[in-house]
Image (cartoon, rainbow, N blue to C red; front, side, top):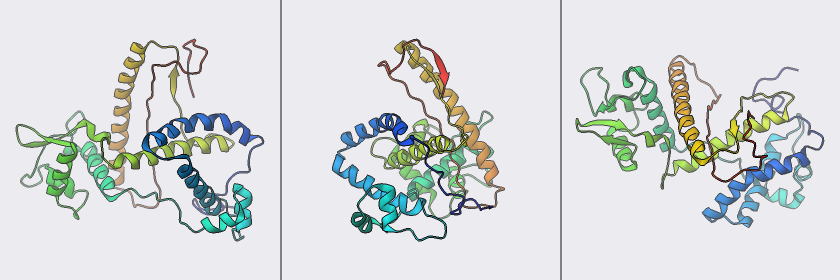
Length: 293
């Protein structure tokens, strides 16, 4: 039977693999450890996290594990989740988790992506040009940049916000320059929490899909070496940052240009890169053997 992407038939989960729950225990414990650390550091207690998980278990079972042609019942949700039927009845219908990006995050990302991709706003090396606030005719300017993304927000309002957040600076020629730190939300910037959820969701979703299906569907790889000196680890981290930023900028330029000819739809694409290193020795044989996973 053929089914369109996004339909119930196309999204029907694969049958559980034998002993999958037992095999999941160790990787899940490792995966959750930094998140538990973040919870404790941020003041989220175990009862609060447990309640959130209870709601998510019910929500996912209710919406993602529907049998075609059958109504999803409290009893079946209870069977899938192990949560008492009365508790299931209380929690059902609470609404799916919110996936939409806050408006300010979406606008900022779109304008910065445009600044990094469009030929009129970049130099011969593909780096973002310093932009005057306004310019005559078709000459590139910050006002033109913002207007190319949205007509609903005044460029001056965007500039004032970005100056306050440290995303841009004004140089000696009174031109606006994009700060590299604009790529990394920090401090009290609420967008960092949005990206925490979105990027981790997509990475975990890709990895989970790969181990659930008969063959990996998504590219999800890493180069890793153990037993390194801290000096070498820091040097490799710095070099990998350069390679990663170049890859991200290239992908952004190609996507931004293709977008101009795209008819639009409901599909979503995310290309992400992560880098991690630590000074303490990880669980390994200490040989420094490298590989990909």
